[in-house]
Length: 117
Image 1: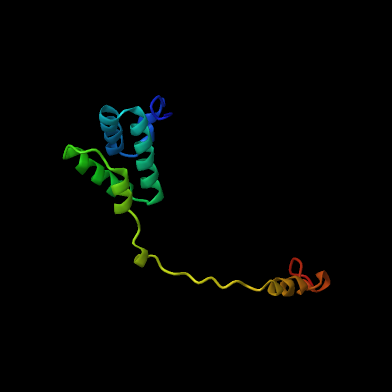
Image 2: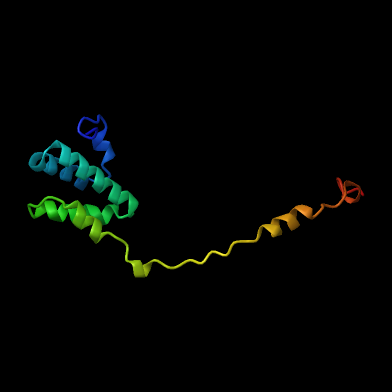
């Protein structure tokens, strides 16, 4: 419900579609639902990195006289499981770090300082 009286609410919305959605939800569904749904829409845009596409979908819904359906939009913007690659991570054995720690640097006497040995 903090969204309702937030002083910088308009700056919080990444696109006009988010503000329009909040206004429409507030007018038709009430304060609690409007706040919850709008925060869900903002989270969806952030989590799925689909801000522009989501704004277009919200605008289309609002222009058609419908309210944005958060569940349907979440489903629409869920990543395709087939498109997510499997990544195999091979861990380096800890003994390799022990070997690195055992390596010694050359002694200071054999280093060249300022061009003089």
